[in-house]
Image (tube, rainbow, N blue to C red):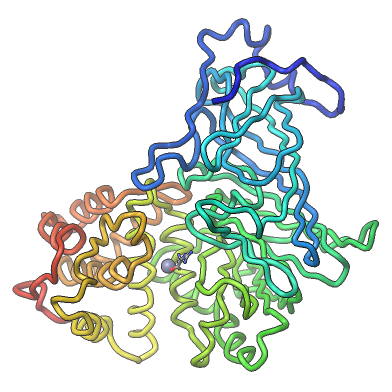
Length: 481
Ligand code: ARG
Ligand code: ZN
C-alpha cells in the first residue's frame, strides 16, 4: 500500500476548484477517513475497478505519435467519494508524472500489477466531489500486464480496443462496468492522421501548433471504461444522418485493399440494422451510430464499442458480413446500455448478441431461428468439450468461449419456446428499459422472465446455463416454432 503521509499543500497551477468541492474545515472534520478498496470484488477479476468513489466524467486529453507509439497527456476525472476517503486507487499502467486532487498535489505510488495508489493532501468527505488530474506518458505497445499488451499498434497508428481490459494502456480509470461515466476524448496527432472514438464530434478536428491536429469526441450517455476506444491511422470517415436524425459516422481503414468493398457493404448497413433491432429490443439507447472497419494489422476480433463498434478486417474475408453488424449493435442494448454487474454474467452480453444474429438470419430469409438452433445443436456432438463450458459461469479463461455465444443463444431460443414469442420479446424490452444505462445479473434476468411469463423457469436456466453436458431435447424444448 501507499504511505499515508500527505503531500505539502501546493496551490500553484491555478484553475483549482478544490474549495467549492470541500466540506468546510477540511479533513480534520471527517469522522474516519479510510482508504478505498483496490477492487470491486468481481467474481473473475476481484481487483478490477476500485471502491470508495464513483466516476461521473472522464476528460481525456492526449497527444499520440504513430511513428514512435508515444502517448502522453492528461486525464481529468470528476468523481464523487462514496465514503470518507483518505486514499484511493485507479487502474492504470503508463508512467505517471503527477497527480492532483482538488488542485492539491497528491502522492502516487504503484501497487499490485495495475494499480495506481493516490493519497490526496486532504481527505475527501463522503458524497463530496473530487477532481483528479493525472498527467502521464508511455509507449503503450511496450507496456506489459501478465506478459501482454492490449494496445494494438498498426503500420499507421493504433487501436485501443479490447475486453475486458483496455483502459489501463491509455487512461486511468475505475475499470469496471459497474462504474459508468460520460467521456470527452481528445487526441492530437500529426496533420493528415485520423482519430476515431465514441459518440459525436463536439467540434471538427482543429489544426494547431507543431504540425498537430486535435480530434475531439464526446459520449453523453453513461459508458463503461472498456467500451471507450481509440482508433488512430489513415481512415476514410463517412458521415451521414439517420432517418430519425442521429449522426451516423463510419470509418474505413485506408489499407483494407480488396476487403474494402465487403467492409463498406457491411458497415454501411449499420443504421438500417439498428432500426430493425430497435423494433425488437426497444428504442436505441445512444446518441450516435456507426462502425469502424479497422486496419488489416489491427485487432482480430470485433468489439461493441459504445455507439460505434470496431471490426477486425478478417470479418470481410468471405464477403459482406451483416451478422457481425447485427451482433455488435445488439450489444448496444445488451452489454453497453445494460452492462454486466459482474463479469461472470457475460452470457447477458454474448448470448443475447448471438441470438440477435439468429433473428437477423430469420429476417433475411437465410434460416429461421429454429433452423439455426437445430443446426447449431447438431454441430456440437454430445461428447464435444463445448458442452463442458457453462455459459452462466464460464470462468475468466473461457469468458469468450463458443459455449457463451452458441449455447448462450440456444438458451434464449429455449426460453422463447417455453414462454412464447409475445412474452419473450416483452421480457427483452422490459430488461433493456428497466435497466437502461445500468447493470444486471443472470439471476435478475431469470426473475424478470418468470415474472412476465408467469412460469417457473428454474429448470430451463439450470439446464441450459449451469449444467455440464448436452441437454436433451424433450417435451417443450423439442417443440418447434
Ligand atoms: N465482445 C466481443 C464480441 O462482440 C468479443 C471480444 C473478444 N475480446 C478479445 N479480446 N478477444 O463478441
Ligand atoms: Zn459479442
